[in-house]
Length: 183
Image: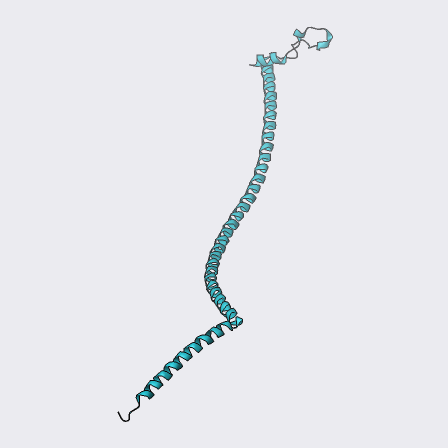
């Protein structure tokens, strides 16, 4: 080597380094203990709040996903409700139309019933008049036939007396006898 260093000097240098290292590690551990005792409580509070913040952010993300899912479900439900409302409205319109048609039909039916009853009444009256006319025609025809056959000749027949005069009822001509004779 270029120059020689005495061996004592090397040992002393190595011992000084070793001693310095020992002293620095002892002082470092003592100072860290002292610093640990002297730690600011605000630092702990900050770390605690940071941890709470991270937890809250993860919860916010999960809740945001849930909210988005619920919003989609609400949209689907609103679409379903809107479709049902449309169907209900359509059915209500049909019901209202059917009700109005039914009311009109009932009114028309009542009118037709009253007209039918009027016609039935007129028909009965016409039948009664027709029977009366037929009866009158039959009586007139019978009288004509009796006159034509000479059975009913007023000049030849005895006078008919009224029932209250005490005469026999046999002398009176009966309308039923006349109709029997005509047939």
